[in-house]
Image 1 (cartoon, rainbow, N blue to C red):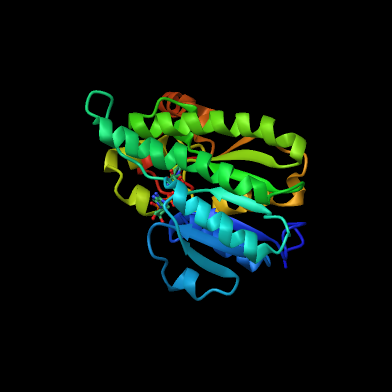
Image 2 (cartoon, helix red, strand yellow):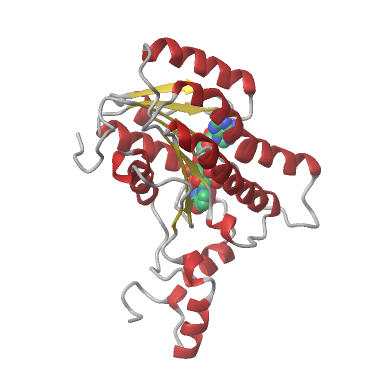
Length: 269
Ligand code: NAD
């Protein structure tokens, strides 16, 4: 059990998109802290999740209402009246088409998964939640600026609206709702990013490294725990300072004559 995460041991938390990447890291982190994790994903989970004590895989498409209803029914039986402690809306897809090129069906698919999914999940599972329960939505630094993949960016900005509306609506029931905005995190999603995007991202990130899934999992666990008991409607960037700097790092580096993206770690102090 992890004493730095009060209130979590012995509870149940649903994490979507937990077959790999950040969702898997969150599931493993929570399971190690004594949480029973429902790892919900459209894709099959690998042995890292399937064989880990405390993690149960559940097949679910976040954009399918019926799938959420089935999960709600299963959890209703499984919890025997105990509240569902947490729900992490982590599943997401990207589609890197620009404004002039995005097809209607691709736009819709991204919105269905990244925005409608969290709405359906919140509607389906909040009847099982009570005071002390916590919902965490995984947004993106794209939700804080005008990132070029327009469908992805719009979906994550929309998710911010859902977070704030849900925090207002569910606060009187003692259910908290917060957002985490990862920057560039090394997962399968970013493995397909263009090299120029990787380079520019690194150059604009004050901490001068990419994030790891565990960087995000730590903050998600904090938001699910009682350590954040009075935090709701908040948005926490986990991005090495990328959104905060808003490009100002590039100006500073240029004036100082530094090229951080090509320098070795520690070279540029
Ligand atoms: P990933 O592609 O490695 O993992 C995404 C997971 O979501 C996969 O397991 C996938 O099967 C699942 N998924 C996709 N569609 C689904 C659906 N309809 N129903 C259920 N599961 C579905 O990506 P990741 O980096 O781990 O992304 C996790 C979250 O973090 C996403 O919401 C993503 O938008 C967000 N994010 C990622 C980054 C990054 O740099 N990797 C940055 C900002 C935000």
